[in-house]
Image 1 (cartoon, helix red, strand yellow):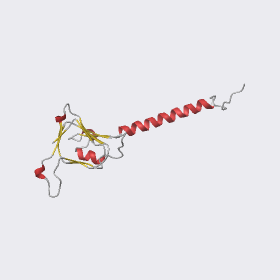
Image 2 (spheres, one colour):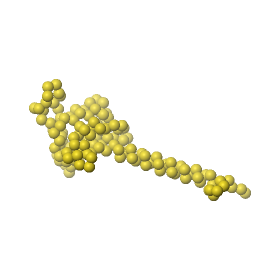
Image 3 (cartoon, one colour):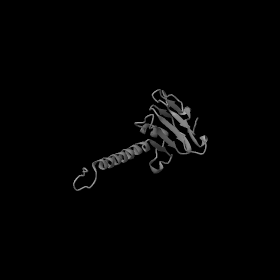
Image 4 (tube, helix red, strand yellow):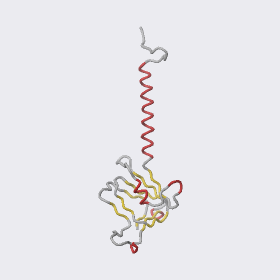
Length: 138
């Protein structure tokens, strides 16, 4: 009985094929994991560790979010005095404080320039499946 071995390698072709598939699977898994982590955006008032200084800056940076790979904007505990407009789909604003009031987005509408809408947060129709968790919006 003869076996088909490749000269010089000493491995059966089916075994090499399995090894190639395993390597390809590992590469695809690494790429998929890297892209999943890329959808986290951090906000901190000081900009520490490359974080965005404002919630709006993080929202503006979102790209490529999908139903299965949401853009998670992780917001450090603080009071953020700004207007925020969300126009992109699959965005989640997540407060990182111990309670919802530890992370607050607020806006003093008495300082609204002529022609602006005056609310703290605007959620456009294009912002499909928007979510906010563990933060106060005043």
